[in-house]
Image (cartoon, rainbow, N blue to C red; front, side):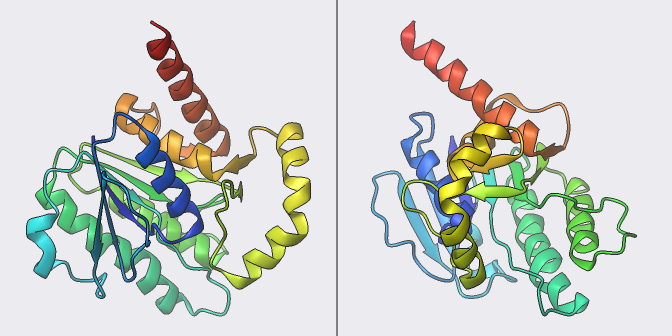
Length: 233
C-alpha cells in the first residue's frame, strides 16, 4: 500500500505516521506539509510544500497512491466562519480535488470531529463547516471516502499536541485518560487506534462513510485481530 499523509507533524497525523511505518503492508509513506517531520525511515519520503491550496508544481509526485490520510486541522476558537471555512473546507478540497483526478483508485480518509453537522444548517459554526467538507468530499470520484469523527484522543508513544491549549488540557487530564478509556472504551480513542483504523478501512472498507468513535475502535480492533491471525498461520 502506498499512502499519502497530510498533517504528519500534528498529534493525530504523527500517530497515523507511526502506524503506517510499523505496518508491514505499507510500502511507501509520503508526507506533505509546510514543515518536515524530521523522522527517518526507509519507507518515508517527505514533500515540504508551502502552499497547501495549490499543488500544480508537485503534481508529478502525487500519483499511484492507494490512500490519503488527511489529518490537517485547526481549532475554530476565535475564527470567523469565512476564515475557518478557508482553512478547513477550502484547504481540504484543494488537495482532494487534485488527488481525485490523479488517483481515482484512492481511498480518502478525512479527520473530522464528533458532532459534525451533516445538514450544514446547525447552530455550531465549526460543525457546519466540517459537515460541508464531508459532504463535498463524498461528491469527488474517489474509490471511497471516509470521515472519521473522533472525540477525545489520547496521544501515545511520546506524541504531543501542537496546540498550546490542548497541551495544557492533556497535561491536566493525561493521568486520568487510561482510566477513562477503560470505563468508556468506545468513546475515548488513542492515536494508535486512529492510525490502525485508517489502514483497516483502506484494506477492508466500511459499511458507512462516516465513522464515529465506536466505529473507529471496531475498525482498529478488527484489523489487528486479522493481522494477528495471519501472523500465527
